[in-house]
Image (cartoon, rainbow, N blue to C red):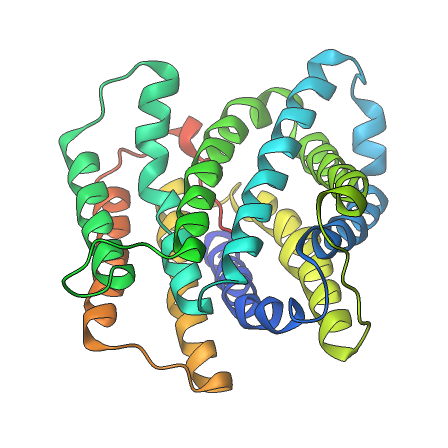
Length: 298
């Protein structure tokens, strides 16, 4: 029963993540990228501190805790910055599917970090997903990648590194400390960077307010809390398969709300990306230490 509830909760988180692509895309017309991230992470940091402050205070505040938290925060901010900047220049569905490449990239990133030879099925999954990304993003007959697609791809790479980093340090210092510190660091980076790194745009309206509230409260604070709880009762493989539904949700929401269509070539590419993700996750050996190594973008 607990496993069923945990997986239903993860389905809810995945739906929230997938739904936010369209919401953020609309908001970026009236707010600059870094300012949006600063607002989103600041709201989430306050909420997470309220939830986890006792657990964080109970743990050591030394470098053994602050270092991993800060490192996770830098990677998290970089990933979201690349994703949000890419989303501004490409469609919500393409951004979601390309970002989803982070899931099959995790085994490869783990192999590079821990110097473990990747398994054949992992390489196959990555190749299938990469071919799908090519069909989805490259114009027929031309080798050309839009800036938005390229930024989304870099986001997937950064998210994969973040997942490996989190899977290593979370069991050591506790998910409460990592959650609060990484979001707080991401918020700090956004607040420091947005006045100098970009032309500040801020036209407060319902779209901007809704995007900040939904992504800050639900797609960050609620999502981190729910995922941390749920992964106590289910495996990393099942969690990853549920998270693989995120780009599908983003595609459906974008089609429903904006009427975004995708050519047959793009649809085949999307299916291949999802297939590559599933190939890797279905064949991954389930070990207790793998629980918690996979999460999602938004």
